[in-house]
Length: 125
Image 1 (cartoon, rainbow, N blue to C red):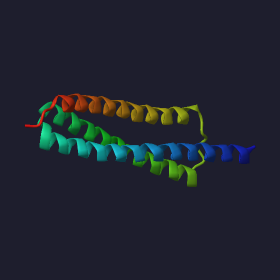
Image 2 (cartoon, rainbow, N blue to C red; image 1 turned 90 degrees about the horizontal axis):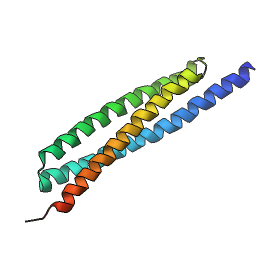
Image 3 (cartoon, rainbow, N blue to C red; image 1 turned 90 degrees about the vertical axis):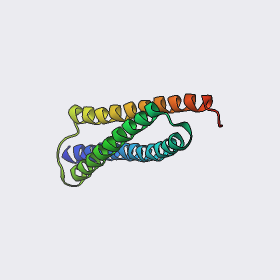
Image 4 (cartoon, helix red, strand yellow; image 1 turned 120 degrees about the horizontal axis):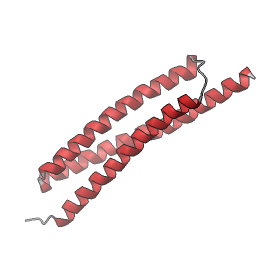
């Protein structure tokens, strides 16, 4: 029984690590895309509200990426040395991280939509 419980615990943590790795990869891709959007804003559009929105999302992205990296270290430590059971509480903690990720993705989509609306209206002189 103990061996099965330990194996399940490790399996659940590995699943969380895989998902977390995907989130971190996406946050890094968002950072690259934000850089590109900011360059276009600076060189072509010159819209202060868009600039502030980009900067705010960049900060949020950076903070979330840092939190995810710390969470990844915690999971790796738990996988290697821990014995804490994978309970509903732990699953809810991970679900909270998923919600944070989802909210950032939604914010990013909103920013891109605003950027595209401005870009479509923009005319080169």
